[in-house]
Image 1: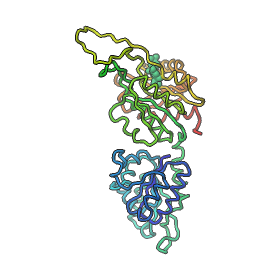
Image 2: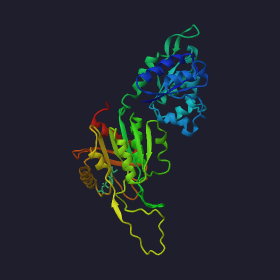
Image 3: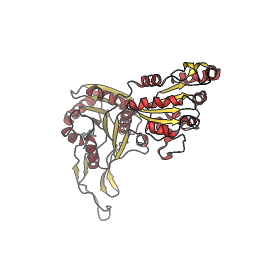
Length: 405
Ligand code: CTP
């Protein structure tokens, strides 16, 4: 799991070193974001060596990778420990003038805070009101514990012990990382078959659904190789930033085949969402074709290799292979019948079938599909955003192969 640990400026930061260690030992990828003030208590070198990742407090570092939002987007879990009165107030107000603030605004992951401050500060109505705001937004609060504080006083305000924060934080996401440990390959986009150096045969696939399938797997803990043929503008942005997604580009069907076959060698699951051209031009011209002296033009096409068929033939033991089929149909029965025939032809473990028309499916944000298993039973029907539909595909994959080992 990808865990972001925010550290604000309190002496309890020394206990957070142990929390990060517990997360690392449990196999999680940890990125620490200290506030500038907290570095007076525990320095950058400690966080870098213990988390094994680069640490920065500034939104101006690593700008090319849009770090101020990338960590938040990639996170499966965000823990803020210690959370000082100041940081909790800033969170409640939604301030974004440091890296921790921007990350917290950019994340959709569960957020867990472990407050640490003196009793008076904790009991102050301002802090209590901020806590109510944060709880109302779904932030999980661990502690503070009641006990001796650094000033020699005693009372509620002591940061909970690292083990307790660790358990409470993981409990908020249990079940979410159900693909952890799986290596998956997803193909997406439409292939472009060259006619000459400037022209191609293509299709209308935007690549969005495949990218959502890849991102859903990554969010649920899988390591993903995303083989992308031509996709729409900006469609790959989030996937390219995700630390568990590797993007490989491919142009024509044979390039896509090579990249997918290469990636499939050690993959547990392959999902072919790409719209692969059935035919390519037998001899693409090296020079730009000219219409001069030609009334008409005949292109001789030959069939492209069936990538899914090749994958099925060479599949490694335990590998699950999923196809996608975009079909035109007047009724659901017709769609199911077409899907079943294709599932049998392809022999895949699962086939996701969706209905397309000139205005449906390709460029829209939503999608609707049904999923057939290898008995040709409809095992799922999903409708909604392409993200929701992507999750339904992974639910079906898990149902046929059981949980990740
Ligand atoms: N596919 C593939 N290799 C091809 C064509 C398609 O691997 N040369 C995959 C697609 O990525 C998709 C599935 O096969 O997962 C179904 O694609 P579709 O274009 O519907 O299948 P076709 O084999 O082209 O079937 P038909 O032409 O009979 O409709």
